[in-house]
Amino acid sequence: MVRSSGSVGANYREANDSVSRKDFEFRICRKEAKESHFWLLAFECNNELETTRNELIQEALELTRIFGVMVKKFDAKKS
Image (tube, rainbow, N blue to C red; front, top):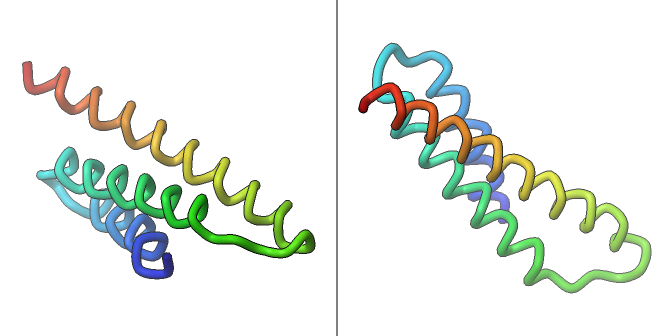
């Protein structure tokens, strides 16, 4: 979980700093966000943490969608 969620931020930063291959980096960001979503669903937690877990699940889904749109924009520019 820590690796995949940390990788989202690291790859996003790398994509923003790069001149080329942004589409590749955003694809990795999307992949890592999807993996984070998976691990959050797999975790069981007590009632105290359930609200936080659900918020993180929602955020992982939103990041997956955002990076998906970014990848589509880069794919459209290539065509």
